[in-house]
Every structure is written in C-alpha cells, then in structure tokens.
Length: 237
Image (tube, rainbow, N blue to C red; front, side, top):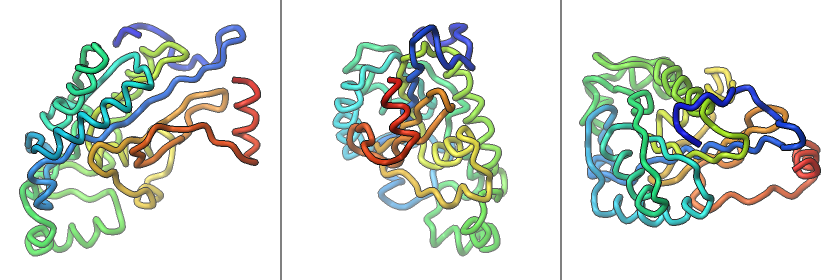
C-alpha cells in the first residue's frame, strides 16, 4: 500500500479474490494527564513512562499482523505511540490532523470533578449525548465527521488485503468508528471507551465493513460459531 494511492474505495472483490481489508484503530499509551484524570483534547501531552512501555508492548503484538501502513494523529501521545510500531515494522508514519482527539476547549486540563463544578450543564448532557460542546471546543459529532473523512481517505488507498493501523485517541476512535460503521448518533453512547494502547478492528468484506474487535488488547482471532454471516465469510475466504 502507498498512502494516497488511487485504489477505488468501493472495491469488494477482484476476480476470485475476497476483499479482507482491515483497519486497526489504536489508542495511544498513557500520559500524566490520563493518570490524573484530566481532559486532554487537543492539548499536546506526551506519553509518560508507563505509556511508553505500553506502546512498545502493544506495537510488538500489532506488528505480527503485518500492517501495510501506519497513519497517526499528529498529537505527540499518538505520534509517539505510532513511532513504536514504525520502529518494529520499518514503516513510515503518515500524519493526519483529522485523527486528533475531540477539542474540549476550556475544559482541557480539568479533572472530572473540576469539570462538573465549572460546566455542570454540559457535563450533565454529556452523560447521555455525544452532541455537547464546551466553550471553545467541538462536539463529538463534529469529531466523528472529520475522523470518518480521514478513514475514508485511508480506505481509498488500501489494496484488497491490506491492514492499516491508525493511531489515535479514545474519544475520537469511539465516535469515529461508530460513524464509519453507520451507527446512528443515539447509539454511540452504548459503546464503551478504550484503555490505553487497546484497539478496535474493523474488517471489510462482501457485506461491507464490520466490527471485529472493540477495546482489545490481544490479537484478533477468527470467530467460530453459529453466526451465519461468519460461516459464509469463512467458506468464501
């Protein structure tokens, strides 16, 4: 794969070749603000020692999947996480600002308790909706739209059997992954967050993109069961 190439994004099958493209959405390692429970958003907080250890460990596991490319948010915590995978695979990292975390505006740097005290109405609504804006920030819906646009460009550059790792941020991955898969906004809050350096796996096939893994920390395994969709995909793989 060459990031920015012209492989048509709608391709499902080439001759007898089943499309098995996969996207791995990978959250960055821990930062000091993560440990302190502070909202980060666009604040450019680097990995702490624990985060660097997490990134190295998960990079080794993800490298075994044979990624064709690595794309990352330009914020340091994601970029430095992606750099660990680049060091193992020898791949260059492409950066995209659309993969940044949601901008929390004036909430950034505040703990949950401080946020409740300063922005009680927004925090109340945030518990039940992703369409909430803090002063100077953006909504999760806006974040999802730009994140999905970035994923669409990544997919447009993928060959039929490529796996691409996208290093990003927990909130952006949650809502962006939901938007990319077509889930309506009112269902986004049903999806939990991501632990540091955990990931989500999205897989393309004859029926389009599917969710394979969510908040995973181990390598994805083929599902074996009675799901007719999965049985059909296995028979044609």
